[in-house]
Amino acid sequence: MGKKLPVLVILLVSVSCHSPRNTSSDKFVSDRYHYTTKKTLTCSNGAVVSAHPLASEVGLNILKQGGNAVDAAIATQLALAVVYPRAGNIGGGGFMVARFSDGKKIALDYREMAPLHASRDMYIDVNGNARTDQSQDGHLASGVPGTVRGLFEASAYGKLSFSKLIQPAIDLAEKGFGISSREADSYNSLQLTLRKYNTQKPVFERDKPWQAGDTLIQTDLAHTLTRIRDKGAAGFYEGETARLIVEEMKRGGGIINYDDLKNYSAKFREPHVFSYRGYSIIGMPMPSSGGLLLNQMLKMIESRDIGAMGFQSEQATQLMTEVERRAFADRGKYMGDADFYKVPVKILCSEAYLREKMKDYDPDKVSPSKEVQPGRTQSYESEETTHFNVVDKDGNMVAVTTTLNNSYGNGVVVGGAGFFMNDEMDDFSIKPGVPNMYGAIGGEANAIEPGKRMLSSMTPTLVLKDEEPFLVVGTPGGTTIPTSVFQTIVNIIDFRMPAEDAVNKPKFHHQWLPDTLELETGFPADTRAGLENMGYAVKNRSAIGRTEAIKISSRRDAEGKKIFSFEAVADRRGDDAAEGY
Image (cartoon, rainbow, N blue to C red; front, side):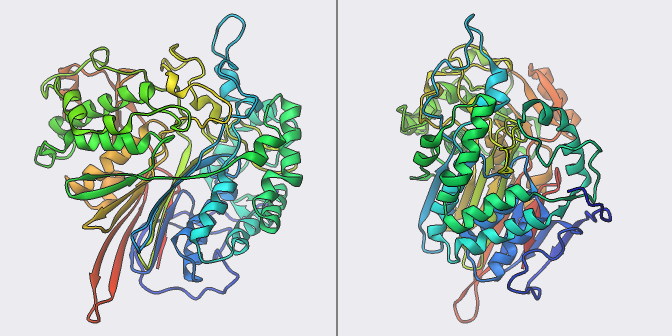
């Protein structure tokens, strides 16, 4: 740890690539210490877009070595667990949505679960106060991790062995990689948290500041990944790794035990599918609210010609803001883990229900949130998540959103195992009906129960045009995730924007409560002024999300074979990188 190398070369480049580089069968990254960040590219054989250049390159090389989109997604996720520890993870969970060239669709839920010893009021003190400090930081904040089990479930749809898919991550952990200036700043800002919550000194903690070009070697994590390679999911949920997790929990006052780990299961669920202007949208069902919220928002604007209103016009922004507000008003009251709570999905996305929700819509003025009913909104959800997309030469599409919740989860690295644990318990409504420290109100549908999965805003999404691949999209950003995906889809379909602009142009967000409209830096001043004149409480904010997108088109060659073209875009808001060939 800490070996100094030349500062990384991080370039923002746009490339066109149609033929593979020469890559040896055992080489997954060209240079772990010096790498570039490609923001946009066009290619025809396969594309990967993720939060880190090395993870995207790992996924690309899996495609080159004969893997399909699922193989590449698994390898990308595992690489992110090494090179992007703030959100890429094996100590958290996520969702995968995929559509295959034969038309089959899957939605895989590997969201974390509440431990068996969890209880509804576990974060309520003797005076009735909600202890958000315990639900957000330290050992008690962790749900049972789902990522490793989820990746093994997904591998049934791959072509390559899991040992091949995990090896790049092992190599990156064992041999190390050069960190960027953004990563160095992030590790430096984490030092107080590491000292406060860790029972053993983790590799990320050190006395002298991290600098760009330093090498991060994670030996404990390499050993954990090796156990997973050699023993499968049992290498994480049983045996040595399970012992390390349980002992860490005991040292820090957490409640995850051996039974929690051994009994964790990932679930295949029916994808949430709906149509919008002739396109087919494939999203994630409960316990992700993303697919249903996206359905509600798109269908509430479908009868209106928003394209004619103009991108970022006062009229279009006001309409989209109002449907965002109305969708989020339903989130907290009705949405939660469908295995525990009957979520009225068919009603919430029915045309009659959505028409009724828009009856009081006025294009000339604000609708105060107190007048938008029904609903109680969600508990706070961190914006430190990560999303990645993969498409292969056969048109198989995979979208994955994964998270630890807060940046670096609960701040605890499992002693001897080398990975951060999540703080996903805070995504439950820790005290239903009572505002938490962020002013948001929780609902009964998302109350804590043992074995229950907490509600999420993650929105991995696929779009088909004439039943052919068209778009793979998603983003981190907590409650801004569904609204950012909503805006990206509208930008491409209605405003007919290039994917690069659809991803990178300033976005906005409204979630009903708090009753504020957030505009990203760079939003048009005249639109802002018009919205303020209508009565909106407008708030400036920095980056909203980090959207990743792959836009797809296809044609037939002279022999009738389908040829794809991929436009891959990595968000300008981070070190995100696109790779393809």
